[in-house]
Length: 308
Length: 308
Image 1 (cartoon, rainbow over the protein chains, first blue to last red):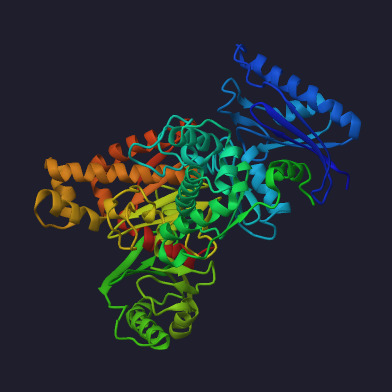
Image 2 (cartoon, helix red, strand yellow):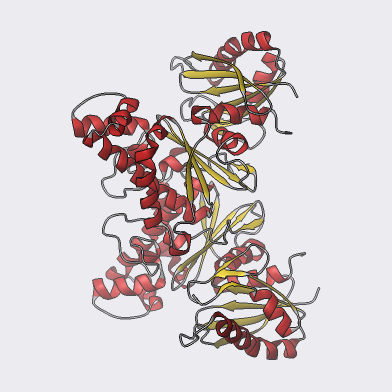
């Protein structure tokens, strides 16, 4: 089996990799692109802009490596398995867009596309800490909080590709913090990287990035440590809600903030067990990703290579 | 296809029915039994007590009707499809109990058993307001709040048969009301029949049953109306959490309190749409059960008769 090409598309950051069948990254390229150009006036021009931009980045990598299949994680809601983008909060001009097919036509290779957070779950399930589990809830702690679910070995994306909006579970129903989604009290407004940065500025009076906050926390800075512990507690509360509905036993966490695992995990686990119903307490394992920030990229490779 | 026997087992109330293939109740019997005898000292004596009690009630009904299969909804967590009871909060003496097999041996007919709330979802999906849907979330508003999920046409019960503990979703994280499960802030502590009764006594100074409260509400009693509206709002908040994770479009509600649908539904729907993420708003339909309090019984018939 030939290696496949994997792409992880963020709002501005794009990662491309050549991935072997066993999930080894052979070559990698990181770049940036502005996919959401606000000047685009029509769906047609937005579609053309996306396809041309992505093809411009991916084509040279294909020529370099000769790959025949591309798997891509993309921020948006997809019709299950068809690779049609139903909608994307970051790219509101696009509706019911045949992203996979259009890109395949342009690149001349097979293209599979799935929601980026679901790709991370697929990657962790195939190659990472969730390997061998029938069911897996995977959480990505990035600028926002993404999540994907594997049920009976298969990705679960819901009726409109909108399942597992875990980051928008409400864990504060009164005077909750404003979330990017427009609602208040979402776990993303408390435990994402951007939330950590905002809370550190508010509570400790200093402005620095999320990595600095959790490194300060690991070094024993009491203010940073308290914020990271609270992030863990809020995550634990949200995970409890998901477990009460889904009854999954294994949960994996990837993304930058998982670097503060030694603070995050005990806080998260304690709050999770408090909030579960009695027979579920202490039955749930929350594991740090073994793929770190490669879960999405490896999941993208996996969807291009489903038969393995 | 012969009619099957269906049983819906509550803490004290037991319903038996002969059900035709198309979900018509041909004959019915209601009775009571004390299944959770606190004097029972061992698992063995508890098992014998349950089997003897159930068989004593069911056997005459079998002899009367000559049914060859029994489907039963039972309050507890079941290992998927095997009919083994993993545990039951109401009957703590029972662990990993081959309930279906033991009852089949005693009665001499085929027995299928499933969680009572999941049976209600199966019934509503096969015969009621959820008919024809691939996915269905069904909620039973009784003394507690039960819930069951159908995904891709199949009952979903999770890894330990503990999925869809919807009634214990937390919708009040600060100073939440104490729930029967021991946690605080569960939706069951606000929107179940027993919660309605408690809240009415506290806020209106009168003691009456849940049916009286919602009938007073329907007659325009402001205090009763406010409590029913609040119950609807809390339900809407909890349903929003479930939809954010599951992305299901059709939700059905049965049980006594659904009698106050004209008050409950507008309050529930408004709060649901407030709490969903933008692309999900207004896409979810919440329907009153068309089976009223027969959903569980008809679901029990369905599991005894899975090939239809």
